[in-house]
Image (cartoon, rainbow, N blue to C red; front, side, top):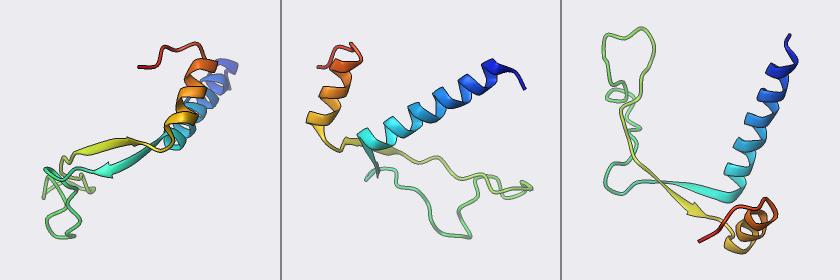
Length: 78
């Protein structure tokens, strides 16, 4: 396997973990996810389940922690 592939996989994993640690994913009040098992599928004739579109909202878990991490990385915050 290519070394670049391994590095890219680890970078994607670390980005995903930081994202999950920084934000809480909350269902949208206007367009919530459909959890009804009959109406869940967007395309009824599809071989696999394809969920209908839904909205989410990202809520900061700990603003002080996020601000500290962003300044450590040299990213402008606010």
